[in-house]
Length: 315
Image 1: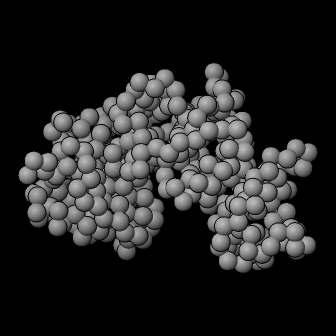
Image 2: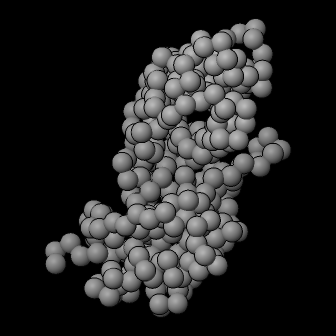
Image 3: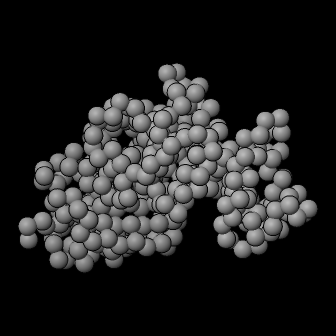
């Protein structure tokens, strides 16, 4: 085989599990995706989940090294990998890997998360740092770049010379899910179809001056439904626009307050395009250009970390 598998890469989060078989060239030779995030593993038997997924690969190709990133390396995961502090890049992550031996004899290394504490309140990421490494492709040539990783806890990340120098977490996805499912705002909602006009209306209201902040504006989701100014089928989209628009405005204010930071010329989105397209629309209303990053950023990042740690042969 001219391009044999050399690595098992695990992107293992709170609700999802993705395993990749990485070839010497860096290509993805095979992949597995399951809803086996750390919260969905009975009795926290992570060994079993790993063996069920990677066992056939190991049987075929031998005891390949495995590198894991995400919440699997948290205090609630399999093996805790302590955080490294900003600024942090590829080499910092590779030097701080935490080794472990699985029940099947396979050697694993857990990627640390990244933390910052420059405003006296800690902020952390775990898994996103590896996606950033993958999106950068191991390059440190870009002087400065801004990344947005939409999700349950959205991350805005500032990178300088290949290293994460600042980031901020916004609980956008979780707040939306809780409000839609467990608050009065969801009572009038019907269906889950997307409504672009309602989404844009929410984005615009988020930015409107003189109308209070998010806590005041959120109730408009109910009143617009009560008075049938937004159809029941469009209320989810309206609420989504409201919270995403608020996230963007808060993030831009944080970037502006950071010494030396200016409004980014282009923002690189890392993650699924289904969610990313909402951010493309929302960011465009704030005059920001966007581009998508590496499609399999986590897998690419894990391969780069493994190479930097000399766990796999150099290409």
